[in-house]
Image (tube, rainbow, N blue to C red; front, side, top):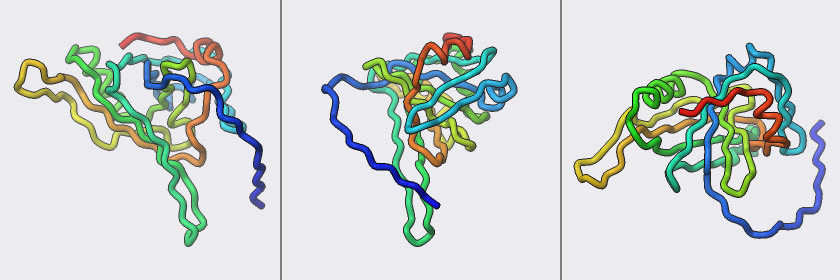
Length: 178
């Protein structure tokens, strides 16, 4: 039987948003390392050590995330289509290797916002997977951006949860700069 608990919510103070960093984790490697997640009431806790994460610091306004609800009354179904898309500026060899590995794997992505909050995408069973993008893109003009575009999606039974403790994340994962 489905149990629904409604609670009151008071809006907090207005603050700045925007994505400051993206941490990419190979889902299979995280499972092999024995790192576990627990999601309760929209918050995720992390337990374990010896994981690896790779961080990207995108240029301002170059990445976006969405988490739309997909529901059908006819089918009695509900899921959230988590999406992350944007451009990774530059064209270094390590960057290209990271992009290729993200595109061919199943990842989890911790999104750090400029206001100091964190949301974790792809932590449900399916993870985040490439559904498009471009390995390298640039225009002809001197001012055109150059880089790779990433487009990742994942179906989840819950909205991307907030990380309860970033310290737990850094205890569980060794972070490598991209």
